[in-house]
Length: 176
Image (cartoon, rainbow, N blue to C red):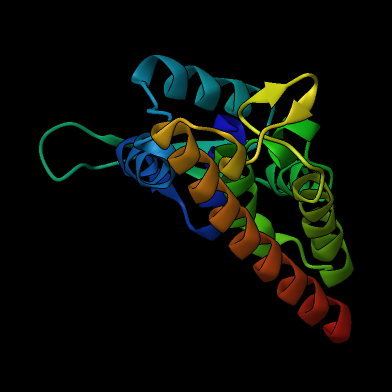
């Protein structure tokens, strides 16, 4: 997901490492913070793979800044990651939000809709945080006030997300 975030933000404009880190932190940092020890090796891998270009610019202070930009190969990689997200990128809410943040870069509305359909299919499968005898426990079935709260909030969030996904898929389908 870190590489997807790097490619996605750089598809919008060239950035230096500090700006890039700030944007990634704003997107997922409260849930999954990004460290320099993860970010800069990921940038180096993408530069080495030819997906990013870098050059030096004078900084505001004395130190020069390394400015990163997306190459044509990086754009191809970004589009492929968006076109075919891995299953954890569909099922994990934070990872899916990262895909969603950059899905507009995928030019084909039918492909955008296909990604949203995968998420909708996943959300329509009955699930729970808790199980009894192999079946999902509903909020009304638990006597625990706190577990009931978790389940009710998850239900409301899931209903809202499914409604939005249906609307978005409809819009994308009509437009393509």
